[in-house]
Amino acid sequence: MPFPKQVRLVEVSPRDGLQNEPSPIATATKLELIDRLAAAGITYIEAASFVSPKWVPQMADHREVMTGLTRRPGVTYTALTPNLKGLEAALECGVEEVAVFGAASEAFSQKNINCSVAESLARFEPVLERAKQAKVRVRGYVSCVLGCPYEGEIAPAKVADVSKALYEMGCYEVSLGDTIGVGTPLAAKRMVETVSRDIPMGKLAAHFHDTYGQALANLYAVLEEGISVIDSSVAGLGGCPYAKGASGNVASEDVVYLLNGLGIETGIDLNKLADTGTWITQAIGRPNRSKVSVALAAK
Ligand SMILES: CC(C)(COP(=O)([O-])OP(=O)([O-])OC[C@H]1O[C@@H](n2cnc3c(N)ncnc32)[C@H](O)[C@@H]1OP(=O)([O-])[O-])[C@@H](O)C(=O)NCCC(=O)NCCSC(=O)C[C@@](C)(O)CC(=O)[O-]
Image (cartoon, rainbow, N blue to C red; front, side):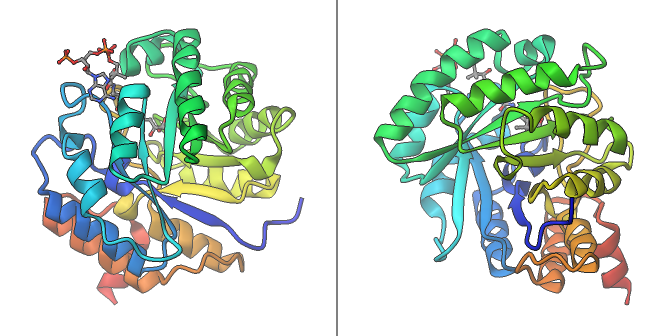
């Protein structure tokens, strides 16, 4: 299949990128990050997470983040909502889109959201219904699509089952998460090919972590399959608190550089994005894991 002409980047750094940070990050820093990302041309930003502050303390300021945003036209600001409680709180903050998050692994589902995969799907149904009433779109995540920190290998058929359930429930897009970044290109290709038997390719997104340095190769493989939505995180920030060994998401700057080289449009200003990566890593005292950002800064 030819590469897509355009790719939409879903920037997850304010949520996935920061959620695992042990020291509190000021709300003002999060807001500045979100605004700098939008100024660089990112049109879809996952800004916060309406989860329990006991589980993920770094996301405890979700209300302040969602209500403190400077909303730029053409940019969607979204948040994770694992249950009705989270959705109601997000709606109060005027959120226009949310995401539910499930897993293809039973053990990960228990560790991450304290319920089985079947229970999670039952929990998401009223979230989807309420969101529909409120005219709020819902994205679905599936974690551990290429491996689980507790169960090891995950069958593509299991990924397809959970993805199909989310899609049929009303999620407009399903994001396939290699939570611990263990995937390799052939496995990524086969997984996407299996899931796309039930869900149109245009409704799938790739959410790859770079723990084993394979994320860009895996993205290239699934772009060839027709994937046209990619989740990424500036400076490669990221990691899930409930996935031991999970490191950062693929760096947005590296993805944009790859896509530019392939002649695929994103509408993103790479230099501004790289500056944002340099700024946030300095602000929170983390190494910049984007090779492109580091290379551009050294020029
Ligand atoms: C899902 C729950 C809440 C279930 O947690 P639970 O303990 O089973 O829930 P509960 O309904 O029994 O409630 C327990 C307490 O949590 C509160 N509570 C209940 N719901 C909420 C809420 N929405 N917001 C705020 N508070 C909430 C509730 O009010 C109560 O408070 P208490 O009475 O003890 O004071 C919990 O397990 C949780 O918050 N987990 C967080 C998981 C998480 O955020 N993980 C990281 C994101 S997922 C990810 O990173 C993967 C992804 C998406 O990036 C893709 C990939 O890479 O694979």
